[in-house]
Image: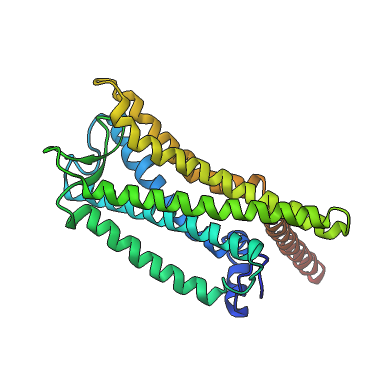
Length: 301
C-alpha cells in the first residue's frame, strides 16, 4: 500500500491500522503519529502536573521543587520537545523530497521506521544529558512562575539550555529552508501548468494547502521556544504572570496538529466520516439481525 505522501505500508500492517482509531493519522503520514505522541507527552506534563500545581499552589505529586519525580517530569517534557524539533525537520524534509526533488520513494515505511528508531535514541540521550549528565541545569515545571524553567541557583553557564537552543535553531532554520524551497517549487509548477492541464493545477493547489498546514503548525512551535528564551531577560522582577504565556503557547502548539488535521485536512475528515458511517452501518446490521432473530423466535413459538 503506497500512501499519498510517498510512504509504503505492508499489507498486514495496513489492515491493522485500518481497524484501529489511529488509521486517519497514519493515512496522512506516519510522521504525524510521532508528532502527536510528542504533543501528548508535553500536554500531559503541562495540563496534569503544572496546571494542577498552579491551582493547588504547591508541587502536586512531587511535593518538592527538585524532587526526583519532578526531574522525571522535566525529562518527559524535554524529551518530547526534542522529538518535536526533529519531527519538524522530518516533516519539512518529506515535503522537500516529494515536491521539490520529485523523489517519492525515499520515505518508505521501512526507512521511516529506522529513522525514528535513530531519532528516539538521539532525543532520549539528549534528555538524559539535559537532566542528569550536564553540570547545569535541570529543566522543571515550576508553579511559582507558572511556567517552565532551568534551575540555576549559582548562575552558572547552562549547558542544558545551550542544547535546547541548538535544537530549536537547527530545527527552525532547516525547516524554513525546506519550506522556502518547496514554496518556490510549487510556485514554478503552478505557473507551468496553469494554462495546460487542470488536474495538475489542482495538484499544485493541494500541495499549497498541505504546505500551509505544516507552516502553520511550525509557527506555534517557533513562538513557543522564542518566548521561553527571551521572557527571562525582558520580564520585570516580580511580574511572574508573564511567564504563563509559555505553557499557553505550549498547549496551543501541541493542539495545533490535531485541530488542523481535523478541521482542514480533507483526507482525515473523509477517513473519520468513513469510519463513523461504517460503524453506524455495523450497528444497524446488528440491530436488524437481532430484530430478525426475535421475529423468527416469535414465529416458531
